[in-house]
Structures are given as structure tokens and as C-alpha cells.
Image 1 (spheres, rainbow, N blue to C red):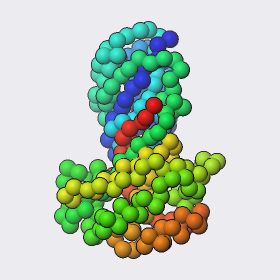
Image 2: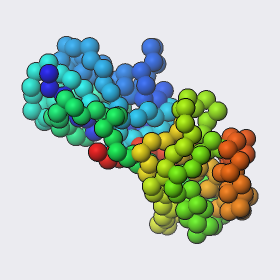
Image 3: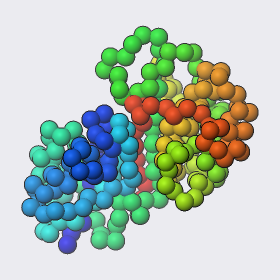
Length: 245
């Protein structure tokens, strides 16, 4: 039974997250519906990671098993023809070995978070970035991000609803860059805790606006207590951008 790797993008504003939920519009549900229409099969589409409601993707990866060999191009065209009006686009298809698993074969995942820092309202970027009006010290935000690199107990930076048994995570990359009024964070780890990226970004923003200091961030990390962490940034600016295999 051939297995296909799918690279997927979507605007998360119209979805109740990645994971299938009966009677709700989810990314996984839309993909499985498209597979059913394309192949006539009820198939589980396995994703490389879950995204919450409102979170976008430009490089989500999934896999699906079909019952016949088709060219990747035909699978791409066929599935996209049924996804066209659902807000999901498959941007790449590869036939892979059946040992490949979108989630368990992943070595590292990358998220991007976008902040638009300006006084005037957003137009076409509304809902696609965190609009921040207050002045931000970008260099201080960059310095704060570096403090979170490496292996830490991120209890202070995960949702109270996080189901992970182990709060230890290793951040391999946390870059803060900017151009004009856009600030972009690029964050990489093998795995993330629930809401970890959004809470880290909310905390970094608090430092940038002068509400917190670098020392406050260090204290929050050492506290291992969610109530000691910063705010949760909105989903608007978060993009699941890449998976490394």
C-alpha cells in the first residue's frame, strides 16, 4: 500500500485546529474528506504535529496510505481539487517508504511568529500577525530569546491543559529578526509543549515593552510554575513553518 507525504498550508482562522473533531471544521477533517472523495477510502491522515484553533501553517507535514500507486502530481492535483473551497492547500506530495511517519520520523519542528509593530491599524495582515502598538526594544527581545535556548523545564511556559508527561524540552533555535515594522521569531525544537511558543512570545513581548526584565524571565523559568510565566500571545501570528526529517 503506497504512502504519500503531504506538505500542507492553511489559514488557521477558519479552523478549530488540526485534530479531527465531529461536526467542527478541522484541517485533518478536511484532508480526510478530500482523500475519501479522491480515492473512495476512509483513511487516517497523520500529521507531524497539532496546531490549535487560529494557528496557521506554511509547512505542516502529513502522510496518508492509498490503495493504488499514483504519481505524486496526480495525488497533488486530485486532493487539491477537493480542498479548493475548504481553505487547505497541499503544496507538495512525495511517495515515501512505509517506514516514514509524519510525526514519529520528525527530527525537529520549526515555528515562525510574526509581530507587526506600528501605530496604525492592519489591513491585509489583520489576523495574520500580532498587532502591537506599544514601542518594543527589539535588541532586548533578541537577548531574552537567547536565554531560553537549550534544555529547560518549561512548566512556566506551557498551558495548564498540556498533557505532556515531561516538561523538559530543548530549544535549538530562537532567533528574533526584523525588517521595517515586522518582527519575526524563528523557533526550532524536536517537540513543543502545548502553547509553549505562544507563551514564550507573549513573555518576550512583555520584555520588549519594558514590563518585564531579563531577570524576570530567568526567575519565571526557574519557578517551574505557569502562574509565574508571561501572557499567551494570540494565535494570529503563529505559523507552523517546517519539519526536518
